[in-house]
Amino acid sequence: MTRHVEELIAIMARLRDPENGCPWDVRQNFATIAPYTIEEAYEVADAIDRGDMHDLRDELGDLLLQVVFHASMAEEAGHFAFGDVVASICDKMLRRHPHVFADATHANDAERSRDWDRLKADERAAKGSADDSALAGISRGLPEWQRAVKLQKRAANVGFDWPDHRPVLDKLAEELEEVRHEFEHGADEERLADEIGDVLFVAANLARHAKVDVSRALRGANAKFERRFRAMEAIAASEGRDLSSYPLEEQEALWTRVKRDGA
Image 1 (tube, rainbow, N blue to C red):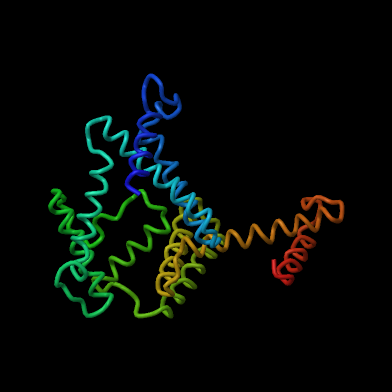
Image 2 (cartoon, rainbow, N blue to C red; image 1 turned 60 degrees about the horizontal axis):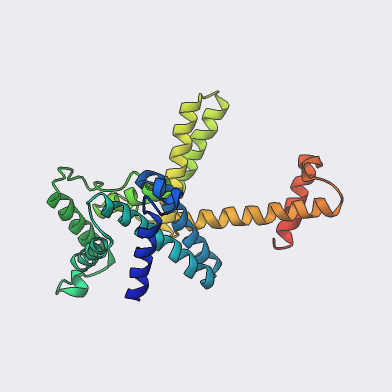
């Protein structure tokens, strides 16, 4: 395995060679590669959702390439190398799991989660951060769904949380009614965005209480919509028509049909 990692690092160095490398790879920097890194992470999640182990192996390789790419650029600039990345994560995992690698004990998952947050806060303080909020350190680069859940989890760790899903459902109904009110009273774009944002935030909280991963749930909903919509298009094509030629009532009937048929 070590030989293959070293080979991958050597391949990246060759690609980045200013004189004999690939022009595209040579032109890249951290900012231009970051979107590809995010995309590859989503490709990994997609392969997992589909249960495709062959694709998962390949997508994990693509994601590893992103790590090597960033580390290679950092090494060129004299910041750190791939080995430093590996050493850093090894140190972090040992430090953050004292219940595995030391003698710490936790009564339950909630206590373990609080200790994890405390260890991360200690790390931020060691780096000179003066932000001691329970919400400190939550990346603003996360997809907003994920950031919402992380904010809610941190707040819950200090007791700011509903006891179960029932008041969350009540709050969701309340926020939906506020959106309805804004529509009916000619709200401007900013007010609507604010109210709809509240609905989405509470929906994320509901998923957290249900122990449902928001991103995975939304990917599933997207996949289901796409599958059913494509089935509608296929029916229209079998009738020699384009789906757009159907009035809305007929499209809704098609939707009901493909849903009933298990699409």
